[in-house]
Structures are given as C-alpha cells and as structure tokens.
Amino acid sequence: MWDMAVNSMILFARGKLFKNLGSVMLKAILGILITAILFVATVYYLSHGIGWTSVGHIYASAFIAALIGGAIQPFLFKDLKYA
Image (cartoon, rainbow, N blue to C red; front, top):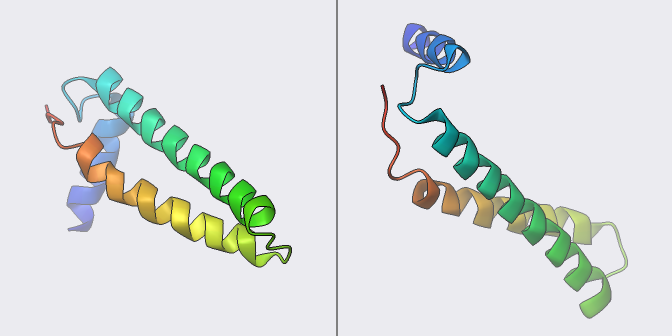
C-alpha cells in the first residue's frame, strides 16, 4: 500500500499520473474556490446575519465549508482519466 502511494506521488510530481493534468488542476482550483467562498459567506452570515459574536462562528463556518467542499469533490473528479 505504501509503495502504491509513493509511486502515485512520483507520477503526479512528474505530471504523468493523469491524462489531462490541466483539467485536474482546473477542477481542484474550482473546488478550492467554492470552499473558500462558502467559508467567507458562512462567516459573514453567522457573524452579521445571526449576530454570533464569539469565536465559534469561525469554527462552525470552517466545518460547514469543509463538509460541503468535501462533498462536491467526487462530483468534480468523477471523469478523471489516469495515464
């Protein structure tokens, strides 16, 4: 198992793991942007909309954004082609 993970990391670093590396990077950046926008929006909503003034709104926003951002990753990466 460890050898497979190391081999995948080496192939990724060389740019030979995926057939279309540009598409993979674009989808990864899209997922990161969606998660970041969700985080900022939930921080704003929890602090201004609800009026939650303690530091807990940052942790709750991080949890919500990570949950939704992680849930969309399989949808974004469903059509990946490995080399």
